[in-house]
Amino acid sequence: MYPAKHFQQHDSKQLKQLVNSYPLATILMPNPQSQLNDICRVPLLFDSAREIFIGHVAKYNPLSLLDGQSVNLLFSGDNCYLSPTYAHNKTLPSWLYASVYVTAEVRIVKDQHHKEQIMQRLTDHFEQHFSEHSTDKWRIDEVPVQQREAMYQQLSFIEFIPSHWRGNFKLSQNKPAEIRAAIKQSLTLAGKLSIAELID
Image (cartoon, rainbow, N blue to C red; front, top):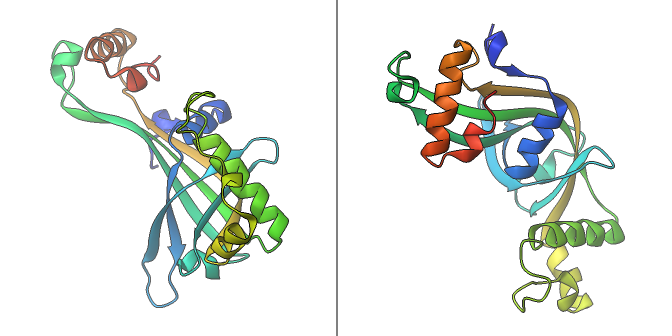
């Protein structure tokens, strides 16, 4: 079984928290000319109210041709090297990581108003870390309507409808509690807080 049962993560709250914290998805797409996948990387926003992902890509991106087909989305969280010194030399060298895999159907958005809504949601979300009073915070409505509509002609707006989620959180869950506690403390002291927080 891969991943091993103790590394499988089924907690939907943790899975969704990871995709929200690390929104840059690696997307694996079927390639009709090869047994291998085409790959692209796209920032996606998970719309929790509708339980879908939204994003946009350049019109020439192969995703634009996959309306109605399924793709795999890979979201990779933080990761780091695990030194035996982190566990008082009671473990071998390893690597800690957390990732989420989502199988989803591609739905190409055609409606102009819907495209505008998606762009608004994306820019509002990814600009939110700027201060409300900062002159650097950018809004889509700063771009004239005609210019926006011309820009949208060069993009494909996409909704991804998830059908299956699975997590692979390799965080020393197969080690005794005292070793996990030592690893968590060592990671915290080393400033690797995002990984440390995932270890229980």
